[in-house]
Length: 262
Image (cartoon, rainbow, N blue to C red; front, side, top):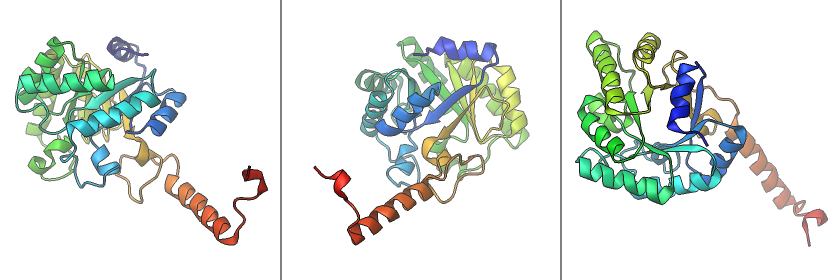
């Protein structure tokens, strides 16, 4: 299993990092068999698996539940779990308590938090408590209402400077990596060069040290995908074809045939 040092070494050696966000035993098992570097149990589970409009309703218990399932599916893969909305922002003590629950109960390797300078002291407390932390800058979905929607970040000079400053602050606070979401290519490149920890891009083009996509997005299970998602398989069509054939064979009595009987 990889460690946080392997990811930092990958940046030094200019080896790209492959991360997948997923939430279930079966998909995590496939990710491990494919040899991905790490899995993120994202709070996007609320939108993907539960149908929420945002990530905000996801609870700590739900993250732990899905993280346990992913760990069972990928016992030898480095796993990071998102800390859900208001599970770390209220106080350092609450952050350590909740992150500790995720680490202990789900046996993951690290947690991920969203935000910059405003949560630096919380990150430092987590790291000093022995909890590896991944940062997240740019489009931070837990702040979707404050940001005014799911929009590209860092388009103004002021916001660019803040994101660059925040990245260095997160590094100094002790994060081992930073997710950069929905930022312009040149800004992602500048941040990646500016910090010594690896950057993982999602909607940040190819200048980052690695990439992450949601399993269900890249496998084509939804009719629409964000601009930054490449659909590697049309999963919905495959499933619909299979279900249609099953329905037809059940209706016509072709299934089950003798070969599927005892």
